[in-house]
Amino acid sequence: SCPTDLNMRYVAAYLLAALGGKTTPSAADIKAILSSVGVGVDDEKLAFVMAQLAGKDINDVVAAGVGKLASVPTGGAASAGGAKAAAGGDAPAAAVEEVKEESEEEESDDDMGFSLFD
Image (cartoon, rainbow, N blue to C red):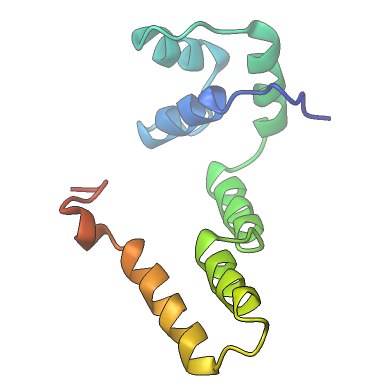
């Protein structure tokens, strides 16, 4: 089972190594990436991550993770539900739809003036 204090830094470094062209990054690759940005390495956690990813295609692992994320509730859905509850459950569908549209606008990268991928 996964330790509860497992940090995603090892997974992120593994993904960076994979993006850099290493089809199966080694523990040494992960250590090199983490140490290059001044992050310490816990050998036990690194060994756990390496064991979990051993023999797996990283594209398949990411695809499986994206499927799991689809079931995670988002803030937009919660705010729409909150508006309906605040109105005593009698909120017309148009008002709920308006709240959803506002939530989508708030989450838009255009409103921030930049994108993470520019």
